[in-house]
Image 1 (cartoon, one colour):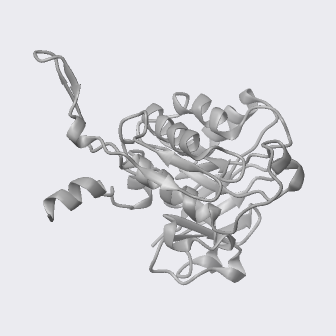
Image 2 (spheres, rainbow, N blue to C red; image 1 turned 135 degrees about the vertical axis):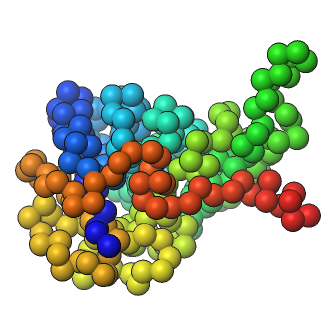
Length: 269
């Protein structure tokens, strides 16, 4: 099976960013990741992804949002909104910066080792807090939604607490595609795990993408990885041998759309 292609894309301004992302889309890439540095200033990755949502048509958009510097409820809402705006092409590159200066921007001095897992779990719970058929738009009765299909998420942790539901309906993909480094230690929570070529986890769980420079010989990754994430060096991106043809990001990656946990529980009750 041909490798899936993705790329990390960065640029100093929105015009250049749009041009590089459109080039990756034309080359058949499944998604791009948008790095984010809380200290760099400029436009935050999630906002850049929102800018690209209606200026692209096929490629997935995965901004890096840091669990340690982004409020979890806002993070989940921002990503759900991106999935709606892009018609189901949102991903989330899970970030967990521990840089003291970055943490100081939100009044923190350290990161709880279990925090990343908690934030991912809460985000997934919030995306499921609206069932797919919660919005009914019944003009005759004036009912916009069925309250029995909207659920509270209750979480109390060391750093944050959340009482849902989300303020947006369920994302078109059901769950935004969650992408993260193997070094985070939450492989069981990811849809796509990213690692260096010599540290790739065994396949059989989440999709495995090797993080490599553009110049890397990707032929050697066949059979040990599902895809490659090319690190942005400013060089021209090569065409993908297995071009993405559109649809949602989950469809492009061959991932099923998850069933809502509340609907599933009710059916099996």
